[in-house]
Length: 512
Ligand code: CLF
Ligand code: SF4
Image 1 (cartoon, rainbow, N blue to C red):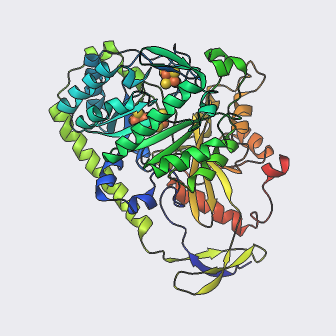
Image 2 (spheres, helix red, strand yellow):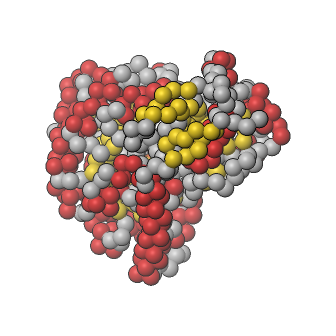
Image 3 (cartoon, rainbow, N blue to C red):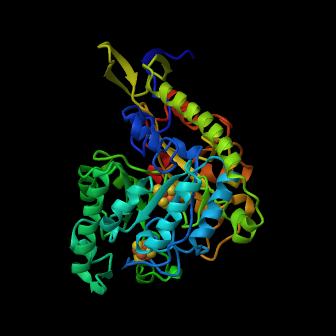
């Protein structure tokens, strides 16, 4: 049967085309050149950039000056990394050597961050010595730091001297009564202070530090740990306040609380948020500021692209054996950066090109609505519902076999385009679909993690997982292998629209 054809504005190209997560193509268009230069190759500050550019952390900061209920000091600072992994502690000299070794080996590594294992600014000598040396020896690497904020105001001047353009402050609350449920104590003026009073001091220092940094033109990202029942509703207020004070980006991260980590919350059975709760809060906050949705809660010695870890290639003994010619490496790095930046610029320019009318096909029974076109014409356009799709991706393409995926990127497809909304961790199904101690198989767990998704796109998938996904109401799709993610997601959405599948509620919703 021939389908009726109408004209509709084309969905915007580019990642996060609805313009909400991190700094997307849309937001990059509205930025000053100075800010664009700061974020365009920073994998955390630009959602686009994280597919191409890598970061690394050096674990030089062992001590901390506060206690968070989601932290166990045996592990990394959970404000910027996931608990449960212990970093190899480095001296500043070792950290510098490791950074040069990584930068020479992985030319797309553009950012060096210090994020633990304790608080970098509770270890100012070690942190600033590392930054000092790197600013001199590797001026092509951006320097980045993440802090709980307690000692921030006294270090803002020093931070600005070392060409540090990016600072993350973890702000979980702006109300001391909420803070008292998150922080049992702080160490302040040589004394341990507890409860509400401690939280009030911490909050005041964080806010003051934020104001001082933005006054100096340093980009600030605010991390917040979403703790259900403790600060979930309150984080909307946090988002408004930090935006008003000039924060560039808000990264709401899910609490990780496992009893085996030995944290207070883990032992007390405080639950973590479900993916849908995290997304709902991020959606609620995004009216007020740019939300980061691609954070991988990486470890304090992470190396590589977000979502992959190449730390094992750069242990101290391996670095010792490396000969590094950093002058030569800088030339290679500059060439690669220019090439990738040009690609990203082209992608952004495409996203900002005037929308060419696009032919959209749809079934007569598909929902229709009157839509005003920019030039004042009115036409009938299809309005299909929003659909969540999980993608096994690499380098911005649908490029991973379902069984090899360690994570899935989740996109929300609608008439407005494909919008990145988060990621879901997975175990590799191909490593064996064994039943875990909790009675669930690897495949069961993946299906549970993707329960709100209607489609999973991957480069290939086996017969058995295909059947299980379909039975769970998640349609596997291997027809868009090696296509750019957003184009593949929108192609599938258009197919669903044309087939009338967007009239009815999703199978997953019915099941729930
Ligand atoms: Fe590291 Fe943090 Fe700098 Fe990035 S991480 S210090 S801003 S260079 Fe990035 Fe990792 Fe999320 Fe951090 S994905 S945990 S937000
Ligand atoms: Fe742990 Fe980081 Fe909190 Fe310190 S600031 S207690 S290291 S999570």
